Length: 388
Image (cartoon, rainbow, N blue to C red; front, side, top):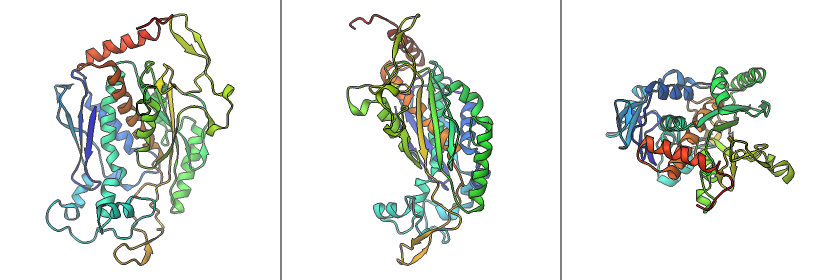
């Protein structure tokens, strides 16, 4: 699967083109739009979320609710662009008043200007903005539909915000899908969720921002997705790289290794023969991936989200056109976007897993992928193994 996104934070629209999805995949536009709404929710979001009402507008690749196998094109309008027309016009001189020369530390502003030769960081931050993750979620919703057709589900929850941590209880994707969204911070522990909200309120009062941690769980994934053959084909490498491509993600962990502090006996998952054929593991400390491949257990991925570096009180920087010391530009932003980041990372996981599943199963139609997935599941139950 290949995909490309385009669009700026305050431009007219965001765009997605995805090629390589099978024909015959039934899409539900309401479910896709619900995921877009989930990305916009969460305690601690900023004023932009009260303006936008993201809806996916399909313009190619889908007919009568079914994918055709052709490239899919989706547009997501930026409602706030109406207030930015004079500043973001593609042709003609942009109106004065929205230029950014007081570059913000922690963002792409300064280095982006150096790389692309800009003297106005507006050209950088409009594309570097996490607003672009709306297209990521749209593609993830499509891929999630494909995965649900073959019995794979993906859920997420927030495990920490600003140092307020939930317990390390292990959840399956189905439980997360059913429960996490009932909390404004997407925390599975109500008491801890209340403390997270209070921590966000304090940060807002202080003019500060908060990061945190999230956990993504993939249930029902067949064994043997990914490969040990080459580093770039390892499933954990692909997932980790994709997660790190999301704005503000600064660490990814797969496996209960606690920073390398545990001994080998505390990290292994012993194997036993299942009565129904195949193998099972007594634990899931590897979090579903062994040797770069899925092993049939839940895949569990944890990610750390840094605090948004745009502060209401401003921080010290320089004006890139004069070299003078100034306060950084204060763009509208969130106090805490951790709950939204969990939804985005669900979508990233869905895209990666759908792509890797299709790589293994092949097929140009949804029916072919379903049949191949059934055969893949049966292979893992064929004990004793025989030479292929």
